[in-house]
Amino acid sequence: MTYFIALAIIVLLAVVVVQIGKLTELAARIRGEEAVERSSNNTQGIALVVFMVVFLVGCVWSALYYKNSMLGYGPLTSASAHGFELDHIFNVTLFFTGIVFVLTHIALFWYSYKYRSTGRSKAIFFAHDTKLEMIWTVVPAIVMTYLVANGLIAWNNIFPTLTSEDKYLEIEATGYQFAWDIRYPGADGKLGNKDFRLIDPAANSLGIDWNDEASVDDIVLGGTDKILLPKDSTIKVRITAKDVLHNFYLPHFRVKMDAVPGLPTSFIFTPVKTTQEFREQLSKYPEWQVPADPAEPNGKRKWETFEYELACAELCGKGHYSMRRIIEVVSREEFDTWLAGQKPFYATNIRNTAKDPWAGKKLFDYEIKARGFELRSAVARYVDDTTGTMKNVINLDHVFYVSGSSDLNSDLSKHELDNLVTLMGRFPKLRVELAGHTDNVGDAAANMTLSVDRSSKVKTYLVEKGVSADRLVAKGYGQDQPLENNDTPEGRQKNRRTELRIISK
Ligand SMILES: [Cu+2]
Picture 1 (cartoon, rainbow, N blue to C red):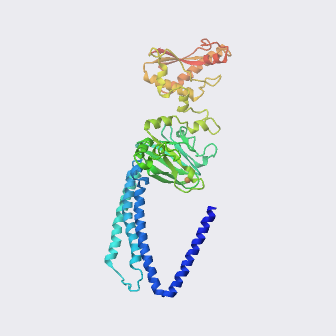
Picture 2 (picture 1 turned 45 degrees about the vertical axis):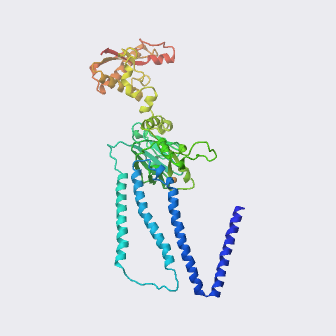
Picture 3 (picture 1 turned 60 degrees about the vertical axis):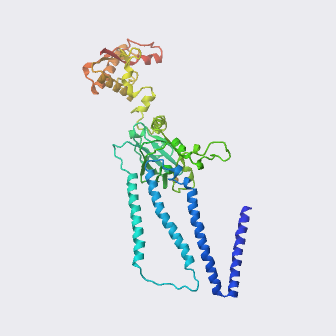
């Protein structure tokens, strides 16, 4: 119905215009061509000047009315360190182009009025005016040089070169139709290598190279997860795309960079206001004191619901709008805690699958931690909690062997022994006995040999790692010193063990 009415109005307006045209033609024939033309020129000239005034006043009024909604003013001053300089350049450019805008529009409309045909005026002809040409060449040249030079200085400040000595957090943003994958480095602070040939839509959509140890603790935030960033920390974003052009745009941080498939780009910036601080900045302006939801006049204010956002600023397809993501800036401490709580992509999706190059070959720090084996307090395990002195007998819980052989089994065994090397280094007077024990399965004499072999294997390993051989005594006890009953599998497992006995400290 609305459509029909709109169409009818358009048709009727067209009819009115045609009729007015016919009437004017008729009047011209009655009153004489020239007189009519002159009066029409007068009307149009005055109309153009009136339009100019309304238009320019309207422009200035709307700029003032909406100034608090524009980036760079009042509530929307920059949330990043470099943004202030960028806003300054923007405002200086706006100042000069604003002057040109007003002057050219006055000239455009005023001349249409002033030089309308009146039948009395004559055109002046002049071929050359050096002074005029100097003015319109030199003045813009000076202004342009000033703007370009300022722009170059700002560009160089905004795009610094980071060296390996600089402390910064490097994250990666990969755009695709229609979302962003954000990759954070784990505890090592390094992003692992990628290779597009490794891309597997189901298991490895970014093509991360799992052979690179830096990859295994990388965290990938996909879909709609909130992106956290630490305040007052330099952040370098590697920006890339998988299918078409996208654009990594953080308007509140004045960060904007194309995401191009096959051509990595980057942006370095430092957030200087947490989300909470930015909300407080907004709360001072009436535009942000209105209810966030007009249907709920007593609900939350608009400033309380503000979020920083990441948007795609390149029209990339029909789902373009859905590339919006929420960014939250928090304190460094809060960020570190959050990051430590995120599960590495490798741990949840790749570990011990057919795609894991490290399956059975290596244990990573995060796994060792997860087993209650604190990496950094290796020495603490050897100290009795109640007396504070070193324990006399310590069971090396994590030393395992290949069944029926004296070969050390997993990397966990080696990890445990590496801790022991640390301990021996910390206490240079320490002498220890490495005591091998077995369960009672099989022949007692064979078990004795096996336990001797196993403890010597441990000794060999420690000596290779730099512990002096005269501080280590390898001894086998076979099945003679069980800790528990050998009748159950659990008991037998407890009895197959390697112990550390302190000889002297
Ligand atoms: Cu996009």
